[in-house]
Image (tube, rainbow, N blue to C red; front, top):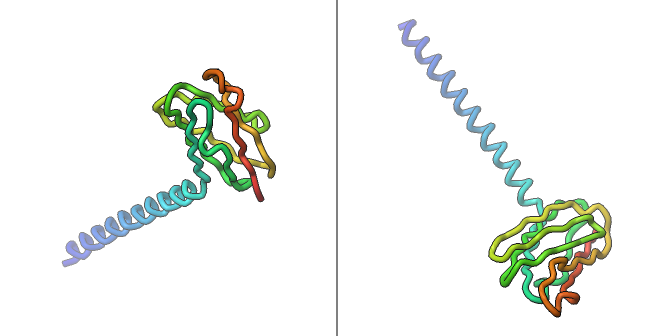
Length: 129
């Protein structure tokens, strides 16, 4: 009988350890999910000779993920005031991550020549409090 009690204690201890481990794993996953949902995700599509949308608003001090796509050819995006730039290859999603520190309007433009209307391919990111 004593042997059976020790076996039950071991089984209960092992079950408790597994249960605690599962709680810890789900808690970590929940924190990662909350962090990911706190990011501001902005989708911008590029095509000759425009971005869509060409004006976006984001909040200061909250991480931003720009999800950039091109529907026709390779483009680029430059946001000099935020020290950001990226190529936007056709048919792929490119992510550009940053956390805006100051409120204001930030101009962006295509820096990969795409034809005669290239000079007008620009937009604005508005950062608000």
